[in-house]
Image (cartoon, rainbow over the protein chains, first blue to last red):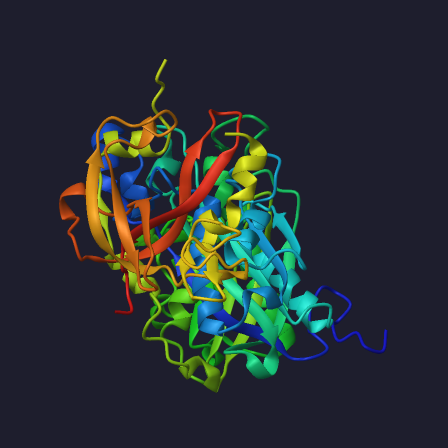
Length: 359
Length: 133
């Protein structure tokens, strides 16, 4: 146990410094406005406080979005695709039920064949568990670089409240040694329990969810416990953080959870994207982190707490380094993807999302 | 097209990896073992940057089998910055916004699906440059 730096109760602290060397985002171009959805379905809009959500185009899926986010991360980190030790994709909307998305991404990046490639699954926190594993993989010395991606083209049954939020996007983190990192990991922690707040059975196109049950016993319990516990054991306080990024299933939950954890609007605003892109599921808190990193300053700290139904939260505390100042100009920022928008109506949305039955 | 035929084309399709003649420098996206210009067999893989501009374009309203789901869509001849001309679909652009000379960049997208049970084929398309000109 001499090399173990945790507390015996789940706190994860690496033996050597490790962090994020490059990051990249992707948000599709299409948007459907909440008032367009409520033109068809008269339920749900008022309670969710969303303006619009992103919609994947006909030729997009989790693999294609993961590829673009990953290309941005590699370019920002300026590393050779062949130097990757692992590519891990977290998603609940896999293009194939059986066949890894990660090998498609690895092939497109030109990283094959000398690496580990796998898909991760845990509802909306699949991307952050891939990140946590990548941080462990690199800090153990088993890989120099590992790529963790969260990506989803989320599903919502026509007329369900999820239709207002379930959207599409991806974020990728290139994990490497601390001395190369723009954000160094201070510690991580996961809090999980068997809570059936949201699930999808095999061969079912749309998920089931527990309505109000998704709140207190699911989202809030796991998010708050994970965030509080990590800060307590790292000896940090809300005022030590420039930003907090939480999972964003709607606009109300992350705002309330951030305030309950002791954070102010100034701290949760930079990483809150749900009002303009919706809930990108496994991409949600990762995309929020990339939006903060686009404007982060050396010396700042950021706390990220994901949430995945079923249920659990992964919390991370990162410290921003001087490497954040690398020239970012030629790479698309999250804001560039948000401003690139083409509005579609519900009929086009139904076609793009495969909600039409051609008989 | 069979699984092996699709599989063999991945490097070119997924990431625009072509070939370069090590004797005369001619580049091509199509895989070749003999240079069509100097007939050298000294051929090496070459990774194209994915940047280029539209040389010509046309919008399709009648699609070949496998591509009907995407109509209408625009195909273009794209002059890569390294010189070769490639034909590809355009994406993330309205058909009336396409112009000759427009700067474009490669993205990897779904090209087609062999029904609900078959292979999903991914490959290069081009879109207007998002950032970095």
